[in-house]
Image (cartoon, rainbow, N blue to C red; front, side, top):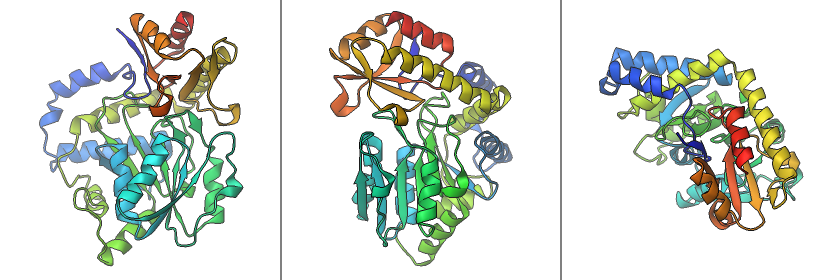
Length: 352
């Protein structure tokens, strides 16, 4: 069996094989998304996610196909004219591009780890939504959760959307400061790809309904109003990834049994081991300054190029991610998700 340190899709959570067997035996892939069995599955999955991530009871949870779809649904459903974006890598730039593609008046604050300054965040008066990628998977830069309380204090009339794709379930997020939160399951939850989760605050829901009442164009497929109406009945407007929801439900339960505090402490312990190694290994250098280093996606610059390192690890059955886009030839990206144990990390480092 290979070890997948790729940052998504990544290593399957250890209990996934047994849950797949259970899904086949219970014929979960054939149940109707309008039936009682699916209603129970939807309700249970949302309940377990609420417990695991401390999602308030008045925040609504809906299921999508991916995190990228969540970006489009948010812009279509909650932005009438203008959005504002914090951009520091490929995925935060994607969120910005989605808004531009949908013909919104989108503006951005572009920064790196060496020049980020929250005082330079100047949200235009007309902007309705502030979009933040909390953990930028392309470069391994994480923004503190404290940023959201600061933004909400400065701009109480703005909605805030947060991408936690590669930091969930590790991240501790105070939902009272954010309005849209989204992720997909093929990273931190260690599941096959094909399922996205979108969480919405009462203020976000009110904005969506307001735009709908004004007759604003909100797309056709998976309109947020339809998703919300379905979620109220524990249903989806279209046939969903039932197997993905089933696996998410079970893995969320497994994580609750293990304990979210234990998972977070374990993640930090593995992260410390990885960063300590690369801080002291000749020919390697963590790409991000210590203050902003992600605990869940460790990005390392390889002085002589990354291809040889990636290829040699692959021969040992260890898969790491290459650099993203312009960093492809010089970076390796290493996932530090709950599916990977400290023993797995030690094995990776021993080969390096």
